[in-house]
Structure formats: structure tokens, C-alpha cells
Length: 272
Length: 269
Image (cartoon, rainbow over all chains, first blue to last red; front, side):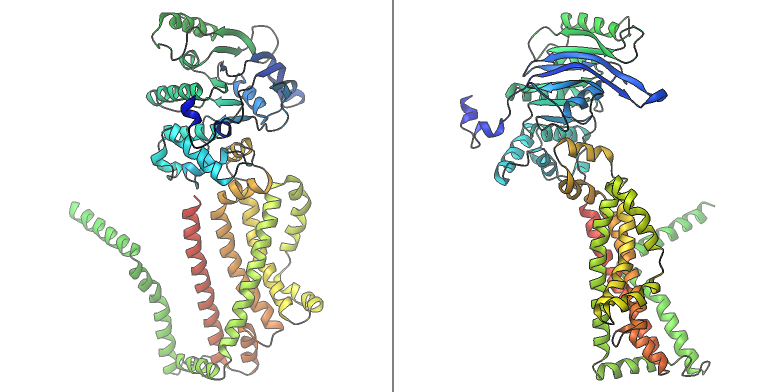
């Protein structure tokens, strides 16, 4: 703590927003109207404590990303509501920051320039530069700060995207399959990086993934989404799992292996 | 067989390396004008055409130096260039702004689209009498006509291109709190820079076109005036001079814009 306080930038300015709790109340989302309407999500209710990492796990197309977009305010639910820190989300929410599956960096801006976009508009130029320098360093891209996105690898671009999200000092960090498109080795490195960042700045993290191992490695809680077997259309919460053990977890631990088989079975993939 | 293929490949490489060399490109581009000039000189020297039909290149040159000596030529060039640049600048600025509005706002598209489309269909010369009636025969009416000509290409390319900006980039920027003018200048306009420049180049060509339309009808100075004035006085030499000057000025301004385009496309993509 003391070494953080002796850095040139006051800690408060870098960690302006404290981690925030998120709660979902009977959230539902339908797309289309009339005969073409279909329900993607229904009756989703759960609570995420401040500073927790929660993984949303489910088969593709089950509405995981829709749920995440509802928290960011990029999409409005058809019924129910999301609240962050006790107030309902309506419209794009400045308390959240998103990292998408693709880096979505502006190709004409440098890595540093792209990270700057994440910094809240009200900060002045000096603050901005300090935050960007720090975050670009945190994700190990200092040497590439002035490179264009197309001049760096996919993993580096994804790290820049993560730095851009962190630059917002989010109360809630939303990660939409951020490591899904990376190769296996880079993915593990990125997962470790995320845990390091979370240890240094423990914000609330909602992580969408279809990778059971990733969920087991990163999350405090795993929320499994999917059809619940009833006649009602759309996905809902079919299972909530508390992952045992402190992070970083041993990827080969037997407790996790058992949980992995059981989660895969819930996802409809038996015998692994 | 293999020898033949080898020769063919060599010829191909030589040609492509020649085409990527700046000086070689210049010389090859100048080849046709030189041939035309030569044919012109030969045909006039042989007396194929009368001096009124087609004066010799030397006569055109002489007409040029005579106008320079009378301090007229550079005034014609200067006033015409000024009109084009002014009309082009204002028209392009309006084209980008209205194009952005119509390209990004559904309601603006529905409300303004049909009217702008109908105005675009009006032939350039149809505006001339009205503009003269409203603004008198002065600079305003001419610059306004050129502005109209420059506006539409920019408007059309910008409004169309903005509809196809990567939705993912825009969503990401919105998620980080960018909206309105900030979103436009940070994401949407940079994304359509190549389209803006192709619109600008079309607009510049249109501006020169509309300049001549404006000056043909009501002017006492400028290259368009030089054209009509020479026609009335039977000065084919000056007529040709004006046409060559229009070609050269148009090409030079387009080349300059092309350089700016190259730089901008590198910078913004």
C-alpha cells in the first residue's frame, strides 16, 4: 500500500471509482415483435458482490453477451432491471468499462492513443497521460505504445483493449469473451495478467466465457446460463457454483477437475 | 518453352519496375501530350487547317505572351483560381457537414434526402439566371454556383460512407462515453477519410466545370470570360490558350489534392 502511495500520481486519481456491486432483478430480453419474436433471456436474478469475479458460462447463443450488454447500458432489457451500486442502469453507464471479444481498437490511433479513449473525459491532459503510461506499462506494452494496432499481435491488441477498459477506472469491468480469439498460450498469459490486475485494483469483474477452464481459473462464482428444461423459451440461470480455493489456482487440481466434469455435464457434454 | 516463359517474365518485371519509377512514369505520361503537340505543329505547318480553324502552337504561345505583356493573363488565371478555391472550400465544408448529418441521422436522411436528391438533379446552367437575379453579376453569384457544384460529390460520398462505418468500432467508442460531435470526430469521420478524399477530388473537377459555366455567361474576367471573349473576336489562339490553361490548372490542383489524399489515407487507416 505504501509503495502505491509514494507514486507520483495520487492513488485516489487512479482508483477513483471503488468496486461496485451489481444486481439483476428478473431480467428478460426478447428480440423482434409479433410472430418473429424470440426470447433470449428470462427471469435472470442474481447478485454480484463488489470486487468479485463472476463468470457467465453457457453455450453460444444463450444470451451471455446480451446480459453483459445490459449491464453496460448498450442494450436495454425487455423486462426486469440491472442495478449497479443500488441505482438502475439506463443508457450507457459511465461506471462500467467493456473489453470485447475483438480488440476494437481505432486503426489510425497508436496503442497509447487508443488507451486514452478509455480515460474519463473530465480528467486533464497530465492526468490522462499518467494514467495511460501506467496502464500501458501494466499490460506490458510500453515498448509498443506508439505502434498502430495492425503493427502488433492479436494478443497485444487485446491487452491494449483491456488497458483501455481499465483506464476508465470502472466500478464494474465487463469482459465479453476477451480471450476467446487468442491462442491457448496467449490465453493463459492473459488470464494471469487479469488476475494480477485484479489483485492490484480489485474491481468487480463480470466475465462472459464459454471456456469452463477459464471460468474455473478466474472466477469466485460461476453462473451457468442455458435452457432450464421447462417449456419456457429462452435461457435462464440453471446453476450457480462457488469455485473453491484462492487464486491463482492450480490448473491441475483434482477439486477443479471434478467441478470441470460436473460443469461440462451441465452444459450437455458428458464423459469428460 | 521455358526460355519463352523466362523472357516473358523478364519483360513483365522490367515493365512493372519501370512503372513504379517516378521519372519513368512522368516521361511516359508526357509522351501523349508531346505526340499531340507534334501532330498539331506538323498539321498546321503543312497547311491542313486555316489559322482561324487551328492556329499553330507558336501562335497560341504568342497570344499568351501578348496577354502577359498587357497584364491580363495572370489576372484571368488568378480570379478563376480564386473563385474555384473559394467555392470548392465552402461547398466541400457544407458537403461534409450535411453529409455527416444525413449519413448518421435516420430522421435527417428521411427529411432532407429527397430534397437534396432533387436539387442535385438540377443541371448546373439552370442555376445561373436565378443566381444572377438574386446576387447580381458579381463574385457572389459565381462562387455560389461553384459551391453548388462542389457540394454534391462530397455530400454523396460522405453520407454513403458514414453508413458503412464499422459498427463494432462505433459501439466500442459509445461504450467509452463518446457521443455526438466527439464520436463523429474521433471515430466516424476518420473512418471515412478515404471516401471524403475521393469526394473532394470529384468536387474539385466539378468546381472547375461550374467555374466555366459561371464565367461563360456573366463575367468580365477569368478564363471562362477569355473563352467567350475570344469566340466573339475570332481569336482561336486565345481560345486554345484558355482551354490548355484550364487543363493544366485542373490537373495541377487535382495532383495537389492527390498528394494530400495519399498523406491522409496513410495517416487515417
